[in-house]
Image (cartoon, rainbow, N blue to C red):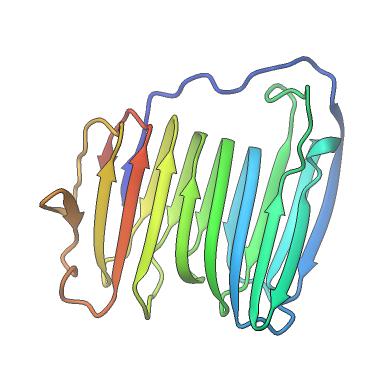
Length: 229
């Protein structure tokens, strides 16, 4: 398990009370529409994101928010046999980020279709349980907050994952039966890689170099904390 952390800075800034209304709840579902591969992009400016597999459709989501302008926008297009999904927080000006604001996404993706996944988080918390997905790529960008990423799934092909952060904490769960190589750089501070071995500028597990499949993880950027396994 890889952990990158920082002494948390105050990242919730109140801009007044205007904009907060009644809690709205809605559910959305998007079918695959015969796509054989997917590019999925999730963008949340502030809030709580829970992502896992298990959807019968391409994506199934439950949303709760009390800032009307943050109503999520879900778009999906298929070109040939390739689909492109985007789920994005609506934008609003002069709304508070803190206090009684709520913005919660519970999303489930299809396990079977190959997915190149991009997640962009601003301020908040995210729990990305990706171990059952058929990932072909992962690009995670964090702002200020806390993120847990589970990559302990079975892989039949090499996978490259990039995790880039600001001020916050990231916990990445890694497989043991699949070769893993971790490159950590940028303001991460002290690195304590328990369970991984140093190899040059990287950290690897016991299966690295022996397994048919390799998981390459690049951890970059602005944490001022520690990394451990």
